[in-house]
Length: 395
Ligand SMILES: Cc1cc2nc3c(=O)[nH]c(=O)nc-3n(C[C@H](O)[C@H](O)[C@H](O)COP(=O)(O)OP(=O)(O)OC[C@H]3O[C@@H](n4cnc5c(N)ncnc54)[C@H](O)[C@@H]3O)c2cc1C
Image (cartoon, rainbow, N blue to C red; front, side, top):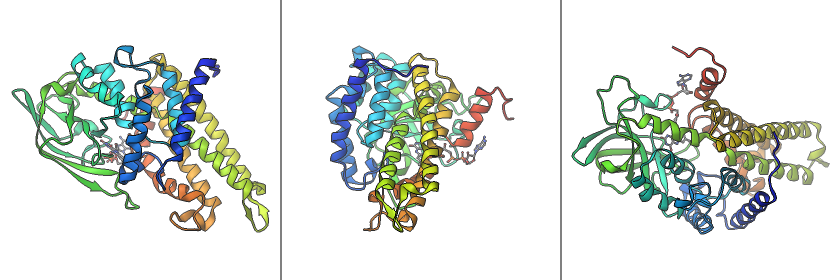
């Protein structure tokens, strides 16, 4: 495969990188990755500010059809994700821009497209995903939240959990059970959109192990949602959910985020002396950095290949699983490597001893979530086994 891009593509790619470089300069202190959008008011304000900057350039709708404001291609969208990942900036709502918009374009009717796409493109409406429940994660189809239709409304009752950013987001997309008597559990599910200010919604924090407030439990008590907020058809929400999950797992910005981390570590090793010798001359350090560079290059090739397949609508189910596992597990190894390099200073963040502003202490704590969020790596390996390798399915 040839990864050469046209001059025009490279010019736009540079523009993405230039704008993100400027936005990096105004990041709030301690901002690291998506989760920082939700924890503090400064993080949320920064997220909204970056969204506006991208929206006015039309970048939140890049590869959409022209009638909804699109002006680019799938590959432009990839370059944009790379730039955001490299500079670790906010602004492209992972739930609205990355997941819901392509799902609405693929499965929503004209009314849904007309009502919900403009708010995503303008960066005014931020979304959260209400899928997982206390007893339904990997086995999402066994979810218990019901939405019983009464006239022109559904009345929703149940509990969702692990809802990232639900305490700040404006709207939610949820999967709910509209037919409790369906023969099979994945039948009778519906994909619904609702305003998080609707009466009957209670959001409670689910604090991460270091105390950050990124995730939530969401309680739904007699929440009334108009029936015309369904994406796809009533009782056929499983197909819509599957479609969105494919967008959820194509993890492209993460690769560039790691590229930057590697560059920062190389610079650190070239500039830091331990016991009188420059760290970069330690054979074990060189070995680990070179190994990480090789793995990163392999991950980048995989991600580009998948982006290319996605742009041709040829992406296989296991492709998304492969890139999710590859990038998440590599991030874990890079976080471990960095904390090893920093020695005991690797364990501190808010301290004069913290290295590189404690960035890797945060990643060390956060890499654990990458193996679980967006479907666990065990489940992704199962998908690769039956869908990619044609191994018999588990009973
Ligand atoms: C940081 C974070 C953010 C999240 N954000 C959101 C969000 O915004 N919205 C949302 O809806 N959900 C979110 N989730 C939920 C996430 O999708 C689920 O945690 C995930 O799907 C796993 O479900 P579970 O936690 O119920 O674990 P379980 O499904 O109970 O799994 C427990 C363990 O058993 C393993 N396992 C289960 N079934 C199998 C099998 N068939 N074969 C092999 N192993 C198996 C799993 O891999 C896992 O190790 C988030 C989770 C995390 C950790």
